[in-house]
Image (cartoon, rainbow, N blue to C red):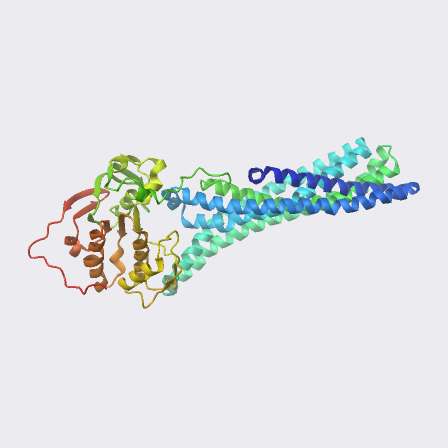
Length: 556
């Protein structure tokens, strides 16, 4: 199973030590069983047996403690590694694939699949010890009588097969429930993100509850109950098998096979002793089945439990110590994707563009024209299906893609705002942040201490200003703004276009702003228009003599 392979990768030495300790614990338990059986049937050597009994009583807890603590340490270390590795791989998966999967599947993987897998990691110590006890009991029975052992093994095999067949069926229902779980996460996301629309429209609210959420929740319940029902019946049958085997030993096999009374009592004690570890193993099987389903789902997401070969993090120092940035080029770049409710794929390109240091460029076009997709291609979040990106005239390889992306500070239209300036360790960071807070007129609402914002609970326009503040602190060569001014009031729109953008340009930054605000195009150097994935024009801005700037109070 993959989880055992993952543990082996994490620490082969600890796993071997834990398994050996588990074997010793199991063998010691079986030794106690043999001593008890001998003492019950042989009264002349009870003193010697008593010494052995005391020794094994001391060995059993010591071996168990070593096995459980070793496996617990191994399991927790593997659990930490698993969480970090899956998170690292999600960050390494191409953005386009993550968008195609949808946030609900990723959230289901992180909040459902990962805990399911990690729960199995935590029960592996108990599972290993009980397997060792079960094997030791079987070895003891074989030592007592091979013919009786063969008969018992035959019964156990029949029992396991009759138990496993319905368990396999229950796993099928568990997989169906897991698929419905993905849909449930999607509906819960709609519930939380669309709460205002649902509250203000009673018919929509009833339809969502009764036609969407209810059906999926019912299917999830039905599949889980079906799987649990089949497993419960199989588990009850498994418990009954123990007494079936004992009955066969006492009432049937003893008459067919000539054995001593001590052998019969030894087998009976061994089977009774075997009942608890077998129940533990059987009770663990559903968790292993759920973990198997979770692992399969993780694999379908393009992730893995094995160490990933994701792209290496770029060194920020390369931006200052490497060649000075001069230009980026998109050469015959194309990208194809399927849009919602459209059968024919949307094709962006071929795109041929170049951007130079110190330019202020406006990118415009109608809704669905491909502006945001072009921006993601430009900054390296999407990989071109054909064509290439060039930095200072040299092609950007896959190995250099993350380094290439470090040239950009971006505020997306669907941006996420962290409340901490993660990754920023500049000198006097708080002072610089407070200066920008004053410039963005947020100093009366937000403060910063040790790189942590006092609040992000603001209006959408104010939150965008905080996102802009983060971009300022990153101090990258190229800035990309996707409809940044759309949520700003008219006064701050003019501050953005007449002060903030020219100020970035004056500081040598290249600014690419996606916008529909054509009244401000004269501020820029170029205007690029996109329509249906094609460049309509790429023109330099010519300011008419009659054009004059709207007077705006300078920003302090």
